[in-house]
Length: 142
Image (cartoon, rainbow, N blue to C red; front, side, top):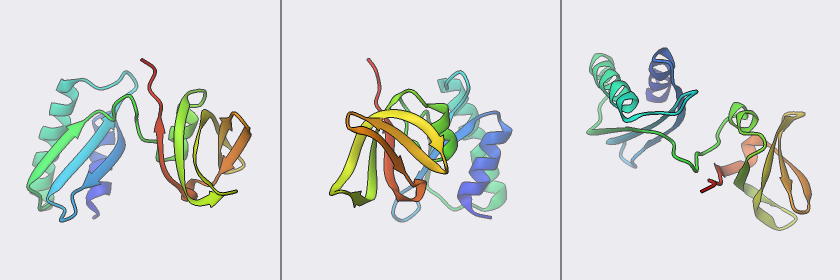
């Protein structure tokens, strides 16, 4: 079983959402970003970390260090569900292949329509394929 799917299943079982997962180039560092309906506390991160540590021992996952944290205010957006959930909030999106010479977009998330992420920009609505999105993050309001 893939490490990410092991993590996702365990995190979901604890009542959280796997917001993002990163590994170091050699796979020695595992970074897990979790979110919940009411946010995430330090105790939540500790609970997930302890659970994953025990699970990795059982599943023979080889790693040196595990970090569990919240995704932060500038949370990455990865799945259609993320774009739906944060509809109405500002985001920055970078795509892999330019559209009319532009790869970076900023605007308000308009959810998902016809299988495309909708982003309302100053120049109008841009419809983006999820597969073409390289990075997408919320823009935090301070």
